[in-house]
Amino acid sequence: MLGAPRPRKSRECVTAKVNYGRGIGAWQPKMHKCSTCGIEFQVSRCPDCGRNPLASTEQTQKTLNKYSFLLAPGLLGGLLAYVIYPPLDAGPLTAFGLCALSLPLLLQLFSVVRKGLSEDIDRLRKVYVYSSLALMLLALLPLLNGWLDGAPGSPVRTTVIQKTFSRRGSATRHSLTVSSWRPGRTVEELAVGTRTYNNALVGNTITVEVHKGFFGLPWYEDVSSR
Image (cartoon, rainbow, N blue to C red; front, side, top):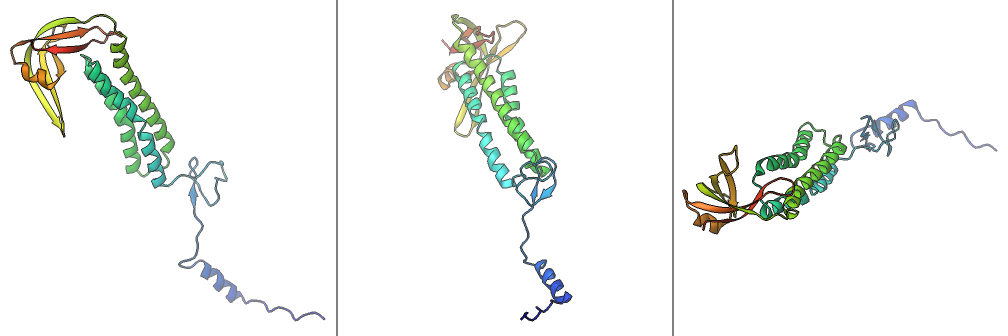
């Protein structure tokens, strides 16, 4: 014996159920945005190009913070080189170093302002890597220039023109402006220690031991006021 036919749901009942599913508080699938073509999708990969979805802004920021640590070895190496083998012409090297250090930070800030950090993550990671390599080369240049320089230094007598010092927190930098012994230049800027700075007097002569440098970049040491 066949059972009784199941009652059919009215059209109004089905419509009400669908509308309830679309109401406030209903579960909505998470949408992803493709990192290449920019379309939105619900699956784990883009159905158009097969690329992974864009990471969230927080995830992108954490990733770039890790890449920023790549700049530390070159920065510390450059500071060490300037302490051990201070170059006479430190201006160009310092300028290139500041450019390599600030480039990825400025590009990341620009991406944050225009709200495109997730889209630019691949480009920013490459910039961080290239900038870290540039800083390492700029640090190795004065280090190798002084370390491989086997020629003895030449003592040079010069006159102190000006004494200056600057403070940044607990660190103090002392420098002497002296008359230049090189053709085409009028003055030289020498970073010195506290004792040499206090003993040097404006108008008096000091002795500087100058080296030619393995790569032809002159550097100095043993600044003496005696």
